Image 1 (cartoon, helix red, strand yellow):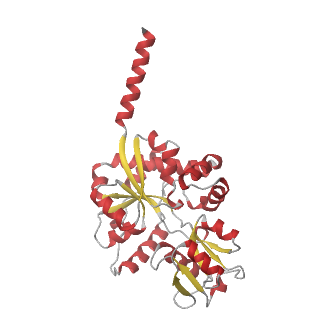
Image 2 (tube, one colour):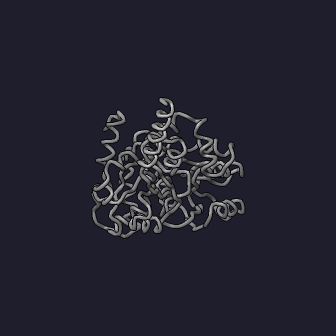
Image 3 (tube, rainbow, N blue to C red):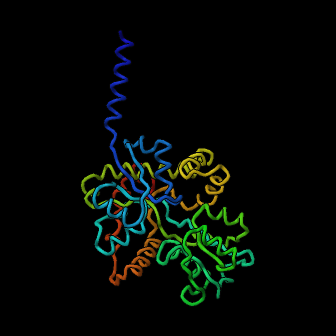
Length: 318
């Protein structure tokens, strides 16, 4: 009888814990720069923090509409959300940063060995004003080139299409997200620079509605903790992370291994948002949206809950 009672009690506790899990929907772009929360889901950190989470692939204006309507609770991408914030269209804030550096790599034709050799050459980007376009301009500036005068930018469409145009001699270089650097190198292209090695420029974390920040700070704090735990796992467990990369992005082990080795440095282990890089993002967003006023950090970010989460995890705040 005692064993039966203990078994029933265990079942009751398990069912209660499942029922108590908070159901949330997280929107995320499809690329590997937003890997933190898919990893947190598949390695159990979201469950550990009391969530039953659904991660939905979504980008751009559709993500903003979904966030405004409550169709998703959080969004991991900064670009489109920042544009809507500065234009006063979306009352949201960045609450944590998981990837303070871009995951873009500048590839070039085999005969081009350095960024400075791109002077007078053509660079293909997916679209003007997008993340890769903004980041590659910062990369050029870092090496002393004027992106307005020293190179010609061409809207070249998809990554695959730009690769073909490079092989045909119609383009000289292009910025790509990892793991396309792996594919480009196999085609003989040279890696001229990796953005994450040059500067900070935050691209991924969590964007939350101001209503959510006010009404559910504990939920946000637990979600922040889950992401930080995932990043720490990623940085310390190569063998455990690579299979998740394979399943998340449907790539084989060779590509997943190259991806891991290529993009690991760009993820932090404390959720901090670098002010210098965030200022760069704000200024670029102002330029794209034609906003000419000063923008305070408090208009686009609220890091108060992050600081609480960091304290609970024993992270010394700066």
